[in-house]
Amino acid sequence: MPPEPSASPQTEAPAEGAVMPPEEFRRYGYQVIDWIADYMRQVRDYPVLARTRPGELLDSLPPFAPEAGEPMDLILNDFQKLILPAITHWNHPRFHAYFSVSSSGPGILAEALIAALNVNGMLWKSAPACTELEQTALGWLRQWLGLPESFFGVIHDTASSNALHAIAAARHLADPEARRRGHALPLTLYVSEHAHSSLEKGALVLGVGQDNVRKIQVDSEFRMRPDALRDAIEADLAAGKKPFFACATVGTTSVTSVDPVPAIADLAERYGLWLHVDGAYGGTAAIVPEFRCLLAGADRADSIVVNPHKWLLCPIDISVLYTRRPDVLRGAFSVVPEYLRTQEDPRALNLMDYGLPLGRRFRALKLWFVMRYFGHERAAAMIRTHVDWAREFAAWVEADSRFEVVAPAPLSLVCFRYRGSDEQNRRLMDAVNASGAAYLSHNVMAGRFVIRFAIGNLQTTRDDIAEVWRAIQQTAAGLQE
Ligand SMILES: *Cc1c(COP(=O)(O)O)cnc(C)c1O
Image (cartoon, rainbow, N blue to C red; front, side, top):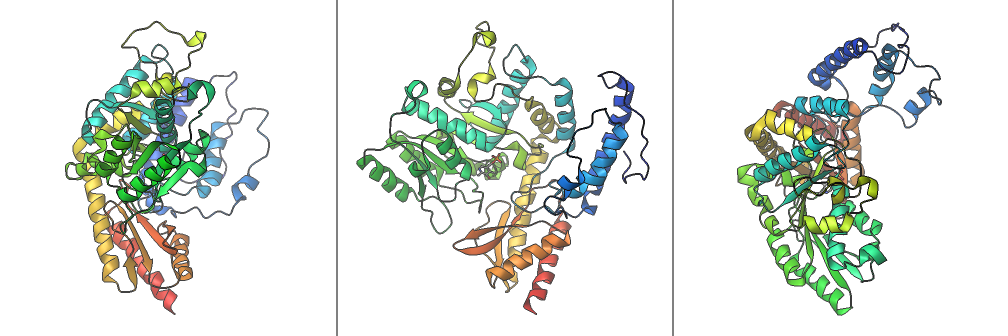
Protein backbone atom coordinates (compact mmCIF):
# COMPACT_ATOMS: atom_id res chain seq x y z
CA MET A 1 0.00 0.00 0.00
CA PRO A 2 1.72 3.21 -1.15
CA PRO A 3 1.60 6.31 1.07
CA GLU A 4 -0.59 8.10 -1.48
CA PRO A 5 -3.59 6.54 -3.22
CA SER A 6 -2.56 5.53 -6.73
CA ALA A 7 -4.63 6.97 -9.55
CA SER A 8 -5.32 3.60 -11.15
CA PRO A 9 -5.11 0.77 -8.65
CA GLN A 10 -4.31 -2.65 -10.01
CA THR A 11 -7.44 -4.65 -10.26
CA GLU A 12 -6.16 -8.16 -9.93
CA ALA A 13 -9.17 -10.35 -9.26
CA PRO A 14 -9.33 -12.13 -5.91
CA ALA A 15 -8.27 -15.75 -5.93
CA GLU A 16 -10.78 -18.48 -6.61
CA GLY A 17 -12.15 -20.16 -3.52
CA ALA A 18 -12.61 -18.92 0.00
CA VAL A 19 -9.04 -18.81 1.23
CA MET A 20 -6.70 -15.87 0.70
CA PRO A 21 -3.63 -17.61 -0.75
CA PRO A 22 -0.60 -17.32 1.54
CA GLU A 23 1.42 -15.52 -1.16
CA GLU A 24 -1.28 -12.90 -1.55
CA PHE A 25 -1.52 -12.53 2.22
CA ARG A 26 2.23 -12.08 2.42
CA ARG A 27 2.27 -9.42 -0.31
CA TYR A 28 -0.49 -7.32 1.24
CA GLY A 29 0.78 -8.04 4.73
CA TYR A 30 4.10 -6.41 3.84
CA GLN A 31 2.25 -3.48 2.30
CA VAL A 32 0.10 -2.99 5.36
CA ILE A 33 3.05 -3.19 7.75
CA ASP A 34 4.98 -0.71 5.57
CA TRP A 35 2.00 1.58 5.62
CA ILE A 36 1.71 1.35 9.42
CA ALA A 37 5.43 2.07 9.84
CA ASP A 38 5.12 5.16 7.60
CA TYR A 39 1.95 6.22 9.38
CA MET A 40 3.60 6.03 12.79
CA ARG A 41 6.50 8.13 11.48
CA GLN A 42 4.39 10.68 9.61
CA VAL A 43 1.27 10.88 11.74
CA ARG A 44 2.10 14.53 12.52
CA ASP A 45 1.39 15.40 8.87
CA TYR A 46 -2.33 14.72 9.31
CA PRO A 47 -4.79 17.22 10.77
CA VAL A 48 -5.58 15.74 14.21
CA LEU A 49 -9.32 16.20 13.98
CA ALA A 50 -11.09 14.69 10.97
CA ARG A 51 -12.23 17.35 8.52
CA THR A 52 -15.32 15.53 7.47
CA ARG A 53 -18.96 16.47 7.73
CA PRO A 54 -21.49 14.16 9.38
CA GLY A 55 -22.76 11.70 6.77
CA GLU A 56 -20.01 12.46 4.25
CA LEU A 57 -18.32 9.05 4.48
CA LEU A 58 -21.65 7.29 4.62
CA ASP A 59 -22.72 9.01 1.39
CA SER A 60 -19.48 8.07 -0.35
CA LEU A 61 -19.86 4.33 0.31
CA PRO A 62 -22.12 1.96 -1.60
CA PRO A 63 -25.17 0.93 0.41
CA PHE A 64 -24.80 -2.73 -0.62
CA ALA A 65 -21.89 -5.13 -0.14
CA PRO A 66 -20.36 -6.54 -3.35
CA GLU A 67 -21.80 -9.76 -4.75
CA ALA A 68 -18.43 -10.84 -6.15
CA GLY A 69 -15.22 -10.43 -4.12
CA GLU A 70 -13.05 -7.40 -4.83
CA PRO A 71 -9.27 -7.16 -5.14
CA MET A 72 -7.24 -6.15 -2.08
CA ASP A 73 -5.67 -3.26 -4.02
CA LEU A 74 -9.05 -1.67 -4.47
CA ILE A 75 -9.96 -2.16 -0.81
CA LEU A 76 -6.68 -0.69 0.43
CA ASN A 77 -6.98 2.17 -2.00
CA ASP A 78 -10.43 3.02 -0.66
CA PHE A 79 -9.08 2.77 2.88
CA GLN A 80 -6.73 5.61 2.00
CA LYS A 81 -9.05 7.63 -0.18
CA LEU A 82 -12.28 7.34 1.81
CA ILE A 83 -11.65 6.06 5.32
CA LEU A 84 -8.50 7.96 6.33
CA PRO A 85 -9.95 11.44 5.74
CA ALA A 86 -12.75 10.54 8.16
CA ILE A 87 -10.26 9.51 10.86
CA THR A 88 -9.59 11.64 13.92
CA HIS A 89 -6.03 10.63 14.72
CA TRP A 90 -6.05 9.35 18.30
CA ASN A 91 -2.48 8.23 17.79
CA HIS A 92 -1.40 11.76 16.87
CA PRO A 93 1.09 13.32 19.31
CA ARG A 94 -1.03 16.51 19.44
CA PHE A 95 -4.27 14.71 20.27
CA HIS A 96 -4.95 16.37 23.62
CA ALA A 97 -8.71 15.82 23.90
CA TYR A 98 -10.52 13.54 26.40
CA PHE A 99 -7.62 11.42 27.61
CA SER A 100 -4.74 11.27 25.20
CA VAL A 101 -3.75 7.65 24.54
CA SER A 102 -1.12 5.65 22.66
CA SER A 103 -1.01 2.60 20.59
CA SER A 104 2.55 1.33 20.25
CA GLY A 105 4.65 -0.87 17.96
CA PRO A 106 4.60 -3.99 20.16
CA GLY A 107 0.89 -3.50 20.86
CA ILE A 108 0.07 -3.29 17.14
CA LEU A 109 2.13 -6.38 16.31
CA ALA A 110 0.44 -8.29 19.12
CA GLU A 111 -2.99 -7.29 17.74
CA ALA A 112 -2.05 -8.83 14.40
CA LEU A 113 -1.04 -12.08 16.10
CA ILE A 114 -4.20 -12.07 18.22
CA ALA A 115 -6.28 -11.88 15.04
CA ALA A 116 -4.18 -14.59 13.39
CA LEU A 117 -4.59 -17.04 16.26
CA ASN A 118 -8.22 -16.05 16.76
CA VAL A 119 -8.51 -18.00 20.01
CA ASN A 120 -11.58 -17.59 22.15
CA GLY A 121 -10.59 -17.65 25.82
CA MET A 122 -13.92 -18.73 27.26
CA LEU A 123 -12.50 -21.88 28.89
CA TRP A 124 -9.02 -22.96 29.90
CA LYS A 125 -9.42 -25.90 27.54
CA SER A 126 -10.47 -23.69 24.64
CA ALA A 127 -7.43 -21.43 25.09
CA PRO A 128 -4.84 -22.44 27.69
CA ALA A 129 -2.35 -19.73 26.65
CA CYS A 130 -4.97 -16.98 26.72
CA THR A 131 -6.08 -18.04 30.20
CA GLU A 132 -2.65 -18.47 31.73
CA LEU A 133 -0.92 -15.50 30.06
CA GLU A 134 -3.73 -13.29 31.38
CA GLN A 135 -2.88 -14.40 34.91
CA THR A 136 0.84 -13.83 34.34
CA ALA A 137 0.51 -10.39 32.71
CA LEU A 138 -1.97 -9.23 35.34
CA GLY A 139 0.32 -10.53 38.09
CA TRP A 140 3.16 -8.48 36.63
CA LEU A 141 0.97 -5.38 36.33
CA ARG A 142 -0.26 -5.85 39.89
CA GLN A 143 3.36 -5.77 41.05
CA TRP A 144 4.08 -2.65 39.00
CA LEU A 145 1.08 -1.00 40.67
CA GLY A 146 2.23 -2.06 44.14
CA LEU A 147 -0.97 -3.98 44.89
CA PRO A 148 -0.97 -7.00 47.19
CA GLU A 149 -0.95 -10.54 45.86
CA SER A 150 -4.46 -11.11 47.15
CA PHE A 151 -5.84 -9.30 44.08
CA PHE A 152 -7.05 -11.55 41.28
CA GLY A 153 -7.15 -9.92 37.85
CA VAL A 154 -9.37 -10.39 34.84
CA ILE A 155 -9.44 -8.52 31.53
CA HIS A 156 -12.52 -7.09 29.87
CA ASP A 157 -12.99 -4.60 27.07
CA THR A 158 -13.55 -1.35 28.95
CA ALA A 159 -13.66 0.23 32.38
CA SER A 160 -17.40 0.62 31.85
CA SER A 161 -17.85 -3.16 31.56
CA ASN A 162 -15.63 -3.62 34.56
CA ALA A 163 -17.68 -1.15 36.62
CA LEU A 164 -20.76 -3.19 35.79
CA HIS A 165 -18.96 -6.37 36.85
CA ALA A 166 -17.93 -4.81 40.16
CA ILE A 167 -21.47 -3.59 40.89
CA ALA A 168 -22.88 -7.02 40.06
CA ALA A 169 -20.39 -8.69 42.41
CA ALA A 170 -21.25 -6.19 45.15
CA ARG A 171 -24.94 -6.87 44.66
CA HIS A 172 -24.32 -10.62 44.88
CA LEU A 173 -22.52 -10.10 48.17
CA ALA A 174 -25.22 -7.79 49.58
CA ASP A 175 -28.13 -9.90 48.37
CA PRO A 176 -27.10 -13.46 47.38
CA GLU A 177 -30.67 -14.30 46.47
CA ALA A 178 -30.67 -11.56 43.83
CA ARG A 179 -29.19 -13.94 41.27
CA ARG A 180 -32.25 -16.15 41.41
CA ARG A 181 -35.10 -13.83 42.20
CA GLY A 182 -33.89 -10.43 41.14
CA HIS A 183 -32.88 -8.25 44.02
CA ALA A 184 -35.44 -7.48 46.65
CA LEU A 185 -33.40 -5.13 48.82
CA PRO A 186 -33.59 -1.33 48.36
CA LEU A 187 -29.95 -0.97 47.30
CA THR A 188 -28.16 2.38 47.17
CA LEU A 189 -24.84 3.15 45.51
CA TYR A 190 -22.38 6.03 46.16
CA VAL A 191 -20.09 7.88 43.76
CA SER A 192 -18.76 11.43 43.67
CA GLU A 193 -20.34 14.11 41.50
CA HIS A 194 -17.29 13.73 39.28
CA ALA A 195 -17.37 9.94 38.96
CA HIS A 196 -17.56 8.45 35.49
CA SER A 197 -21.00 7.95 33.98
CA SER A 198 -20.30 4.22 33.61
CA LEU A 199 -21.04 3.71 37.32
CA GLU A 200 -24.50 5.14 36.84
CA LYS A 201 -24.96 3.06 33.70
CA GLY A 202 -23.98 -0.09 35.59
CA ALA A 203 -26.51 0.76 38.27
CA LEU A 204 -29.30 1.27 35.79
CA VAL A 205 -28.50 -1.90 33.82
CA LEU A 206 -28.46 -3.98 37.01
CA GLY A 207 -31.78 -2.62 38.15
CA VAL A 208 -30.40 -0.61 41.07
CA GLY A 209 -31.95 2.39 39.38
CA GLN A 210 -30.60 5.87 38.70
CA ASP A 211 -32.63 7.26 41.59
CA ASN A 212 -30.59 5.08 43.94
CA VAL A 213 -27.24 6.44 42.77
CA ARG A 214 -26.05 9.07 45.25
CA LYS A 215 -23.69 11.63 43.77
CA ILE A 216 -21.67 12.81 46.72
CA GLN A 217 -20.45 16.40 46.91
CA VAL A 218 -16.80 17.21 46.30
CA ASP A 219 -14.45 19.62 48.09
CA SER A 220 -12.81 22.67 46.52
CA GLU A 221 -10.36 20.36 44.72
CA PHE A 222 -13.11 18.16 43.27
CA ARG A 223 -12.48 15.21 45.65
CA MET A 224 -15.33 13.29 47.24
CA ARG A 225 -16.10 14.59 50.73
CA PRO A 226 -16.05 11.67 53.19
CA ASP A 227 -18.28 13.59 55.63
CA ALA A 228 -20.89 14.02 52.89
CA LEU A 229 -20.57 10.32 52.03
CA ARG A 230 -21.15 9.38 55.67
CA ASP A 231 -24.18 11.68 55.90
CA ALA A 232 -25.68 10.20 52.72
CA ILE A 233 -25.19 6.63 53.98
CA GLU A 234 -26.70 7.52 57.36
CA ALA A 235 -29.68 9.21 55.72
CA ASP A 236 -30.29 6.16 53.52
CA LEU A 237 -30.03 3.77 56.48
CA ALA A 238 -32.50 5.89 58.41
CA ALA A 239 -34.85 5.69 55.42
CA GLY A 240 -34.62 1.89 55.37
CA LYS A 241 -32.32 1.65 52.36
CA LYS A 242 -29.48 -0.84 51.95
CA PRO A 243 -26.20 0.92 51.04
CA PHE A 244 -24.04 -1.63 49.20
CA PHE A 245 -21.44 -0.02 46.95
CA ALA A 246 -19.11 2.98 46.95
CA CYS A 247 -16.75 4.06 44.21
CA ALA A 248 -13.65 6.16 44.84
CA THR A 249 -12.09 7.59 41.69
CA VAL A 250 -8.34 7.92 41.31
CA GLY A 251 -8.10 10.43 38.48
CA THR A 252 -11.61 11.61 37.64
CA THR A 253 -12.44 11.97 33.97
CA SER A 254 -13.35 15.65 34.28
CA VAL A 255 -10.34 16.95 36.26
CA THR A 256 -8.22 13.95 37.39
CA SER A 257 -9.01 14.69 41.02
CA VAL A 258 -8.14 11.87 43.40
CA ASP A 259 -10.79 10.91 45.95
CA PRO A 260 -9.49 10.24 49.50
CA VAL A 261 -9.43 6.45 49.20
CA PRO A 262 -8.33 5.67 52.81
CA ALA A 263 -11.18 7.72 54.35
CA ILE A 264 -13.69 6.20 51.92
CA ALA A 265 -12.31 2.74 52.72
CA ASP A 266 -12.89 3.42 56.43
CA LEU A 267 -16.54 4.22 55.73
CA ALA A 268 -16.95 1.26 53.37
CA GLU A 269 -15.66 -1.01 56.11
CA ARG A 270 -17.78 0.58 58.82
CA TYR A 271 -21.01 0.28 56.81
CA GLY A 272 -20.20 -2.96 54.99
CA LEU A 273 -20.06 -1.48 51.46
CA TRP A 274 -18.19 -2.94 48.52
CA LEU A 275 -15.39 -0.48 47.70
CA HIS A 276 -14.57 -0.01 44.04
CA VAL A 277 -11.59 2.11 42.99
CA ASP A 278 -11.91 3.53 39.49
CA GLY A 279 -8.38 4.21 38.28
CA ALA A 280 -9.15 3.71 34.60
CA TYR A 281 -6.80 6.52 33.62
CA GLY A 282 -5.05 7.71 36.81
CA GLY A 283 -4.46 4.30 38.38
CA THR A 284 -1.80 3.44 35.81
CA ALA A 285 0.34 6.34 37.05
CA ALA A 286 0.93 4.24 40.18
CA ILE A 287 3.53 2.24 38.23
CA VAL A 288 5.80 5.28 38.78
CA PRO A 289 7.38 4.73 42.21
CA GLU A 290 6.86 8.33 43.33
CA PHE A 291 3.17 8.21 42.29
CA ARG A 292 2.45 4.91 44.01
CA CYS A 293 0.76 6.91 46.77
CA LEU A 294 -2.12 7.50 44.30
CA LEU A 295 -3.32 4.01 45.16
CA ALA A 296 -2.81 4.44 48.92
CA GLY A 297 -5.74 2.69 50.58
CA ALA A 298 -6.64 0.86 47.38
CA ASP A 299 -5.27 -2.34 48.89
CA ARG A 300 -8.43 -2.26 51.03
CA ALA A 301 -10.71 -2.06 48.00
CA ASP A 302 -12.85 -4.97 46.88
CA SER A 303 -12.22 -4.09 43.24
CA ILE A 304 -9.94 -1.81 41.24
CA VAL A 305 -9.98 -0.89 37.56
CA VAL A 306 -7.07 0.29 35.44
CA ASN A 307 -7.06 0.67 31.65
CA PRO A 308 -3.82 -0.25 29.87
CA HIS A 309 -5.48 1.16 26.73
CA LYS A 310 -5.39 4.63 28.26
CA TRP A 311 -1.95 5.34 29.64
CA LEU A 312 -0.07 2.09 29.22
CA LEU A 313 0.68 1.85 25.52
CA CYS A 314 -1.86 -0.82 24.56
CA PRO A 315 -4.18 -0.31 21.59
CA ILE A 316 -7.84 -0.10 22.55
CA ASP A 317 -9.37 -2.26 24.02
CA ILE A 318 -8.05 -3.65 27.29
CA SER A 319 -9.28 -2.86 30.78
CA VAL A 320 -8.21 -4.75 33.90
CA LEU A 321 -10.46 -5.55 36.85
CA TYR A 322 -8.68 -6.58 40.04
CA THR A 323 -10.68 -8.01 42.88
CA ARG A 324 -9.90 -9.42 46.29
CA ARG A 325 -13.13 -11.39 46.03
CA PRO A 326 -12.92 -13.48 42.87
CA ASP A 327 -15.30 -16.01 44.41
CA VAL A 328 -17.98 -13.36 44.78
CA LEU A 329 -17.48 -12.19 41.19
CA ARG A 330 -17.73 -15.79 40.07
CA GLY A 331 -20.78 -16.32 42.23
CA ALA A 332 -22.47 -13.37 40.54
CA PHE A 333 -21.79 -14.53 36.99
CA SER A 334 -21.16 -18.25 36.74
CA VAL A 335 -23.78 -20.10 34.70
CA VAL A 336 -22.40 -23.26 33.08
CA PRO A 337 -24.45 -25.07 30.44
CA GLU A 338 -23.59 -28.72 29.88
CA TYR A 339 -21.74 -28.16 26.59
CA LEU A 340 -19.28 -25.90 28.39
CA ARG A 341 -18.76 -28.22 31.36
CA THR A 342 -15.14 -29.24 31.83
CA GLN A 343 -13.21 -31.47 34.19
CA GLU A 344 -12.58 -29.74 37.49
CA ASP A 345 -8.91 -28.92 37.81
CA PRO A 346 -7.97 -26.22 40.32
CA ARG A 347 -5.37 -24.82 37.95
CA ALA A 348 -7.68 -24.72 34.93
CA LEU A 349 -9.43 -21.39 35.28
CA ASN A 350 -12.45 -20.79 33.07
CA LEU A 351 -12.50 -17.04 32.53
CA MET A 352 -16.08 -17.07 31.24
CA ASP A 353 -17.10 -17.56 34.88
CA TYR A 354 -15.81 -14.12 35.87
CA GLY A 355 -18.01 -11.92 33.77
CA LEU A 356 -20.75 -11.39 31.26
CA PRO A 357 -19.12 -12.24 27.91
CA LEU A 358 -18.57 -15.87 26.99
CA GLY A 359 -16.17 -15.11 24.17
CA ARG A 360 -13.01 -13.25 24.97
CA ARG A 361 -10.17 -11.98 22.82
CA PHE A 362 -6.57 -12.79 23.63
CA ARG A 363 -6.00 -9.26 24.97
CA ALA A 364 -3.35 -10.38 27.45
CA LEU A 365 -0.96 -10.91 24.55
CA LYS A 366 -0.72 -7.19 23.81
CA LEU A 367 -0.21 -6.29 27.45
CA TRP A 368 2.52 -8.93 27.70
CA PHE A 369 4.23 -7.64 24.52
CA VAL A 370 4.04 -4.05 25.76
CA MET A 371 5.28 -4.80 29.30
CA ARG A 372 8.20 -6.82 27.97
CA TYR A 373 9.15 -4.41 25.20
CA PHE A 374 9.10 -1.21 27.24
CA GLY A 375 9.89 -2.66 30.65
CA HIS A 376 8.90 -0.96 33.86
CA GLU A 377 11.56 1.72 33.46
CA ARG A 378 10.50 3.07 30.10
CA ALA A 379 6.77 2.84 30.81
CA ALA A 380 7.21 4.69 34.10
CA ALA A 381 9.51 7.28 32.47
CA MET A 382 6.84 8.05 29.89
CA ILE A 383 4.20 8.70 32.55
CA ARG A 384 6.59 10.74 34.67
CA THR A 385 7.48 12.91 31.66
CA HIS A 386 3.82 13.47 30.78
CA VAL A 387 3.13 14.63 34.33
CA ASP A 388 6.14 16.98 34.23
CA TRP A 389 4.97 18.48 30.95
CA ALA A 390 1.45 18.97 32.28
CA ARG A 391 2.92 20.95 35.20
CA GLU A 392 4.98 23.00 32.79
CA PHE A 393 1.96 23.63 30.57
CA ALA A 394 -0.07 24.70 33.62
CA ALA A 395 2.72 27.12 34.57
CA TRP A 396 2.66 28.63 31.05
CA VAL A 397 -1.11 29.10 31.34
CA GLU A 398 -0.74 30.73 34.75
CA ALA A 399 1.98 33.04 33.45
CA ASP A 400 -0.32 34.46 30.77
CA SER A 401 -2.75 36.83 32.47
CA ARG A 402 -5.37 36.22 29.76
CA PHE A 403 -5.79 32.63 31.00
CA GLU A 404 -6.44 30.74 34.22
CA VAL A 405 -5.97 27.14 35.35
CA VAL A 406 -9.28 26.10 36.91
CA ALA A 407 -8.33 22.97 38.85
CA PRO A 408 -5.24 21.37 40.35
CA ALA A 409 -3.47 19.20 37.77
CA PRO A 410 -1.99 16.29 39.72
CA LEU A 411 -1.56 14.07 36.65
CA SER A 412 -1.34 14.84 32.92
CA LEU A 413 -4.58 16.76 32.35
CA VAL A 414 -4.73 20.56 32.60
CA CYS A 415 -8.14 22.23 32.74
CA PHE A 416 -7.97 25.90 31.87
CA ARG A 417 -9.94 28.73 30.40
CA TYR A 418 -9.53 32.03 28.66
CA ARG A 419 -10.62 34.81 30.99
CA GLY A 420 -13.56 35.75 28.85
CA SER A 421 -16.99 34.49 27.96
CA ASP A 422 -17.91 30.84 27.45
CA GLU A 423 -18.55 31.75 23.85
CA GLN A 424 -14.98 33.04 23.44
CA ASN A 425 -13.60 29.87 25.01
CA ARG A 426 -15.61 27.74 22.65
CA ARG A 427 -14.47 29.78 19.66
CA LEU A 428 -10.88 29.49 20.82
CA MET A 429 -11.10 25.70 21.13
CA ASP A 430 -12.95 25.27 17.84
CA ALA A 431 -10.43 27.43 15.99
CA VAL A 432 -7.45 25.45 17.29
CA ASN A 433 -9.19 22.18 16.45
CA ALA A 434 -10.20 23.37 12.97
CA SER A 435 -6.61 24.39 12.22
CA GLY A 436 -5.63 20.72 12.51
CA ALA A 437 -2.70 21.65 14.76
CA ALA A 438 -4.15 19.95 17.82
CA TYR A 439 -7.33 18.48 19.21
CA LEU A 440 -8.64 19.85 22.52
CA SER A 441 -11.92 18.99 24.21
CA HIS A 442 -14.05 20.79 26.76
CA ASN A 443 -16.05 20.35 29.91
CA VAL A 444 -18.42 22.53 31.89
CA MET A 445 -17.30 23.04 35.48
CA ALA A 446 -19.11 25.16 38.03
CA GLY A 447 -21.28 26.35 35.14
CA ARG A 448 -18.33 27.57 33.07
CA PHE A 449 -16.86 26.33 29.79
CA VAL A 450 -13.43 24.82 30.46
CA ILE A 451 -10.83 23.57 27.96
CA ARG A 452 -9.16 20.23 28.67
CA PHE A 453 -5.56 19.67 27.63
CA ALA A 454 -4.55 16.02 28.10
CA ILE A 455 -1.09 14.55 27.53
CA GLY A 456 -0.67 10.80 27.09
CA ASN A 457 0.79 9.91 23.71
CA LEU A 458 4.13 8.15 23.46
CA GLN A 459 5.24 10.27 20.51
CA THR A 460 4.37 13.65 22.04
CA THR A 461 7.42 15.85 22.56
CA ARG A 462 7.90 18.98 24.63
CA ASP A 463 8.08 20.89 21.33
CA ASP A 464 4.61 19.63 20.43
CA ILE A 465 3.26 20.98 23.68
CA ALA A 466 5.03 24.32 23.28
CA GLU A 467 3.69 24.57 19.74
CA VAL A 468 0.11 23.87 20.81
CA TRP A 469 0.40 26.48 23.56
CA ARG A 470 1.66 29.02 20.99
CA ALA A 471 -1.28 28.16 18.74
CA ILE A 472 -3.68 28.70 21.66
CA GLN A 473 -2.05 32.04 22.52
CA GLN A 474 -2.13 33.26 18.92
CA THR A 475 -5.74 32.23 18.51
CA ALA A 476 -6.60 34.05 21.73
CA ALA A 477 -4.94 37.22 20.39
CA GLY A 478 -7.36 37.05 17.46
CA LEU A 479 -10.31 36.72 19.84
CA GLN A 480 -9.66 40.06 21.47
CA GLU A 481 -10.00 42.03 18.26
C1 LIG B 1 -12.16 6.69 30.72
C2 LIG B 1 -12.72 6.41 32.04
C3 LIG B 1 -13.71 5.44 32.20
C4 LIG B 1 -14.34 4.72 31.04
O1 LIG B 1 -13.42 3.94 30.37
P1 LIG B 1 -13.87 2.97 29.20
O2 LIG B 1 -12.79 1.96 29.19
O3 LIG B 1 -13.89 3.81 27.97
O4 LIG B 1 -15.20 2.42 29.52
C5 LIG B 1 -14.14 5.17 33.48
N1 LIG B 1 -13.65 5.82 34.53
C6 LIG B 1 -12.70 6.77 34.42
C7 LIG B 1 -12.19 7.47 35.63
C8 LIG B 1 -12.21 7.09 33.16
O5 LIG B 1 -11.28 8.04 33.03
